[in-house]
Structures are given as C-alpha cells and as structure tokens.
Length: 249
Ligand SMILES: Nc1ncnc2c1ncn2[C@@H]1O[C@H](COP(=O)(O)OP(=O)(O)OP(=O)(O)O)[C@@H](O)[C@H]1O
Ligand SMILES: [Mg+2]
Image (cartoon, rainbow, N blue to C red; front, side, top):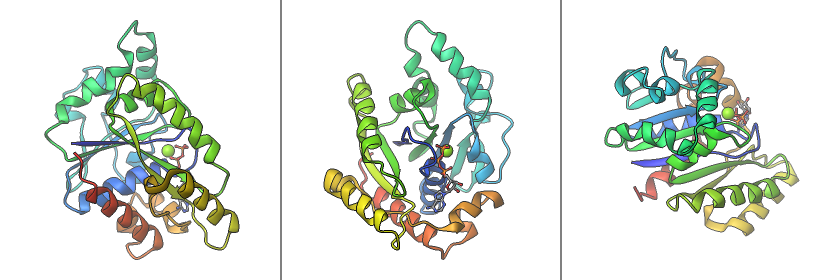
C-alpha cells in the first residue's frame, strides 16, 4: 500500500481539495483508496457529501472496530473521518511518555492489505497529529499556492520533514503540487519557475485556479462528479496519472 500524506504547514494552499480529489480520482481509476482525515476541521466528509458516526479518533482509542470505523464514501473509496473528536486524541497523544508519534501508524496497520493507497489530509501548522501522519506516510505531497511567495515556507517545511526522516527514513517529499495557477498573473508563473528550478522533477504539473474546485465541496461532490470537464478535473486527473505511473508501492 502506498501511503501519501498531503501536507504543508501553511494554511489554505489546497491540501483538503487535493486529498479529496486525488483520492476520488484514484478510486475512479480502479485503485482501492483509504482517505484519512487527520484534521480537526473535519472537511473531508462534507466535501464528499457523507456523514460519519465514527472515525479515526474512535479507531485509535479502540472504541470501535477497524471495519466499523470506515465510512464507505464511493466505490473503492473509504473514509476515516476526522473532525472535533481528534482534539481529544491529540491531547492523549501529547500526554504520552513515549511512542506518541507512532499512535496513528499502529492503528492504521490493520488496513495494510485492504487498500492500494492511503491518502492523508493534514491540518495547517505543525502539531502532534501531523507528526503522527508523517510517521505513518512514506510519501509527502506538498501543495504549494502560487498566489503567495511560498518557497521559504516550503524550505522550512523540508527542514521539519528532515527531523522526522531521522527516525522514519522511508519518508520523503515525493511531490510538490503547485496550486492556484493563473496564467494571467505574472507572479504565478514566476513562483512556478522558482519551484521548478529549486525542486526539478518533484514538481508536478500545476492545478489551475478554477472556481469549480471551490464550489464542488458545497455540493458534496468531487470535481470529477461536479464538473468533469472543468480545468480542475483535468488537472487532478493529470495528478492521478502521474502518481499511478510512479508505482513504487
Ligand atoms: N485550484 C483552486 N482554484 C480555486 N479554488 C481553490 C483551488 N484549490 C482550492 N481552492 C479553494 O481554496 C480554499 C482553500 O483550499 P483547501 O481547503 O483545500 O486548503 P487547505 O490547505 O486544506 O486549507 P487548511 O490549511 O485550512 O486545511 C477552499 O475554499 C477551496 O475550495
Ligand atoms: Mg484543509
């Protein structure tokens, strides 16, 4: 199973949009996908128009079984819901004397053979839950908004990742996904160029600014359902293809 954490400390860069649409696109492409919401904002279920009674917090605390914790959201796509319940879990993790960073990884091992991909949506900032998500993941996908100067933030994020890699060598920054790309804005192209010259092959084809992407969650639909011919659907389809091509399990 490939384990991809969608993460970047900066807020509002398109992490949730990417996690949801990447997961939905992979499922449509025939992959079995587990989408894990590791954010107390709990936007993943809303974005897919499903309601969870149980989720990640209940799984980790042992209050439910691994099978019951899963919410079937689409064909081949199951969600482990996040939301407010994760706040309590975060406190529990922080209080632990040792091993706190492995709590999520331990709880998620039961799904290892059930899915081809685990996609994790993480919160902005850098907290115990994000660290847990990174101790579980092997690949990091960092969405980077082309609207603001982000190179410095990305370099700092890379330093934080390196601190985790010391204890979890399998982890690596596999993909940088430029988001909010707008051809008409010169700054947008400039930041894209900076990223490409600094990170090379890791940089994926950008996701364009597309109002349909911001409307879809309000209808509880992925971009492939809401506007299958929109630029957003095209761009996320390209991401799905790039990631499935790099099959390194
Ligand atoms: N390519 C895009 N074009 C237009 N709007 C977008 C695009 N990507 C995301 N959005 C919108 O921008 C806002 C922020 O996106 P999103 O919630 O995915 O970011 P985030 O990184 O998950 O934020 P947070 O750090 O708060 O979790 C949302 O309203 C979303 O619908
Ligand atoms: Mg988010």
